[in-house]
Length: 420
Image (spheres, rainbow, N blue to C red):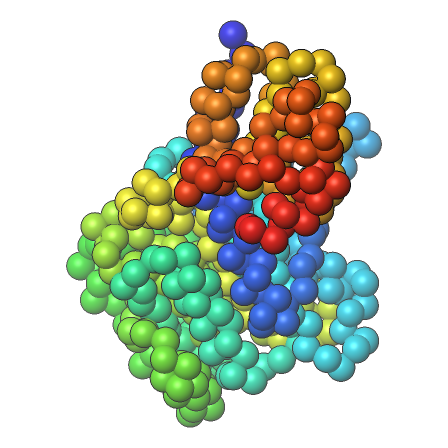
C-alpha cells in the first residue's frame, strides 16, 4: 500500500472545514485592510533562499528541500513566503510605483524538520508583506492585522512578544558585545551554536538546544544597544500599538530565526496555550536591507506569517471545532427516473444561484436520502413526486420547523433564497 510521505497530512473532514473557515476569515480581513493577494512559485532558484534567509540559518543549513531539474538548475521548494514575494517585487519592477505595496498570501511551505503536532514538513502559512514604507505606523498595522485575524478566529488571550534589533549601527554594536560575552562560554554551547558564533551570533539566542541555558538567558539584550534613532522608532511602534489596543510585552529575547530581520521583530502567542511548545501562532519582523541584498533598490519591507496547522490544533480545543459540522442549504429528493430528471435541473438552478444544494447519486430510496440529508444538516428538503410535478408543484420541508409547503416549480429558486 502506498502511504503519504512522512511529515505530510491529508486534510479532510472537520480539519478541512476548519481550513476553509480560516481561509475565509483571512481573506475577508485582508480585503478590509486593503491587502492584495499574491501567489509565487512553490519552487525557486536555490540562490534566492540562500541569500535571503541566510546560509547560517537552520532553514538553509538543515531544512530546505533542494533538487536539480532536468536542466541541472538548482531549485528549492519554498521554506517561507517572504523571499519569493521580494523577488517578484524586484523582477516585476513594482518599486517603480511610489505607492506602498501591501500583499498577502496563503499557501504551502516545505521544511525538512522532525514532524510534530502543529509542525509538519509540508505546512501551510498565511501572511503579509508590505514593501516600500519605513513608517512605524506600518509596523503597528502589520502586527495589529495579525492580532485581529487570530481574534476573529476566536483564539483567546493573545499577546504579542515584541523586540527591536535596531538599525545596522545598533546591530553591529550588539553583535560585538554578544560575541565578547559568548566567547568565554563557547564550550557550553551546542556544536551548531559554536559555528553560529563565527557567522551570525544572534542565532544562538533562539537555539532550540541552548535557549534555556543560563549562559543564553544572561546574554546581553539587543534593546540595551539601540542607538537613539532606533529607540525612538521602537517607541513609536509601541505607541501606535497602544492606540490600536494590541496587547503586547516587550521581550528582549525575541530575535527570530532568519538573517534578514532588523528593527521590529515579534511573535504572537495564545497565553491559554503557553504550556504547548508550539504556542507561537505567528511571527514576523522588518527587513529593510533584504530588497537591496537581492539586487533590488534600497527599499523597505515588513511582514508576518502564521502557521495554519498550529491554528487548527488550537481551534480543536474550543467549542468551535466540536460544533463544526457539514451543512447545506437544500437537499432534493426523488424516487422515479422522471423525478430524477427534475431533481437534476432543480439542483443545477439552485447551485447556479448560490444555494448549497445536493441530491442523491447512489439510487437510494427515500429513507436513505432522508438519512443523507440529516448527515449533511440540510436546512430544507425538496421532495419530488410525480403527482405534484404534473401540477407544476414541489413539496418543500423546513427541517427546523418541520413545516411543509407546496411551491410552484418555477418559483422554487426564489422561495429557497428568500427563506435562507
